[in-house]
Image (cartoon, rainbow, N blue to C red; front, side):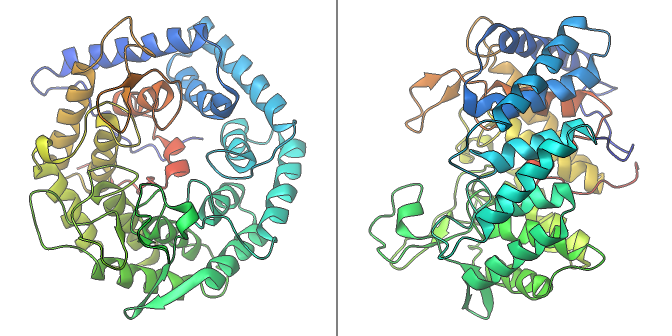
Length: 409
């Protein structure tokens, strides 16, 4: 779980209002701890809440209540993994629960994880493959589990399946999302579409393949798929505009327009995914870096951000900008990340939600409370911990946001 020792806390320090901002972040983190300790965690969120407690325990080593909550969360996670599972996906199933346990338990859960390894291997062997190919629910997510486990057979099966599912198009390689797996209503495309995003699309494949390509002996076809997918994705950027450079998806008859600025869809996820893959595989980072710097200049009113969550809210954009700053030491990226953290903390309402944070439903009007990683308190808390401590947030390997850090300026 440890980082490389080069991570720079972004909040605090000498910038104007830095100490006040750091105190506000610390207050929010502790409030999230209190909220999560006081509620019953839904089964689907047990793993992600345990991930939060692991990093909180590292930050608050002398806090007995935090340490006790962490120990209890690990016990609940092991019990959860030991039960029956219908789904094997990274965010809603066994692979994700195993990923978290592997990440936080070091070598203390080998027997349990060996059973997870076998179950996920068997899931990848199913043919015909009828599940999504994506990070959240599909093949890419299972590959992320096997990256964390350094499991050669699992990675070989992942690449082989991605190769089976790949489509050659426009001089590159992509993957089709079937209509039954569409997420936001383009049902007028009966043949499906080509998703560009990190959570459900081609950017996720690029980030995963970049990790695998950097291994000493990557499986066959890894580099060809990586290079082809990277070409395909950059061919589908839009003309420069105040609203961003990438749409959510490509499909026949679509009127392409920029997606909101989020981890799941749009420029932030694509920037961090392509930048990380290029760094790991020896490719050019310039297009990705330019995309990230464009985010730093972007007016908040064009982002579509209305809440603080990690998936498509202000802490998610702040964390990605923070990652890009740590990789480049570019001051504009640091300042933009700090501004988005400030916005997130300004939206906190103590006494509501988890630690004062609520998330908005897609209509932007109805609000709800959640302990989850993507849309709730666990994710907000992890992003704030990443901004206030010197511990590199290796938890974001789960989201394919772990852009390698640079030496301090």
